[in-house]
Image (tube, rainbow, N blue to C red; front, side, top):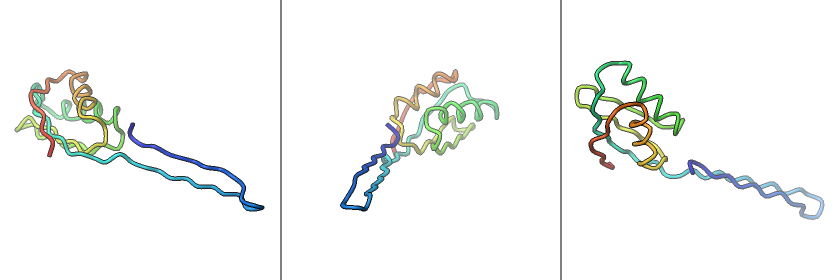
Length: 96
């Protein structure tokens, strides 16, 4: 789950009580070594695939090094699957 919200409504005498809390899962930085990326289209495809799974993800792609660095609260496997589903091969994963 990327986020959780709680809403409590009630009555305290004559005053309504409304409490809303938003909790965000902690973000991680994950570095993927990816094969098959060679151009700006690849950068766009990988970035789009990851952001379909987590719209708030921050994605950096280094074509020369074959690395995709992602800051996200999504599970690592979800992000890896996004890259794989975009047609690229993840060969290694490292959490930073």
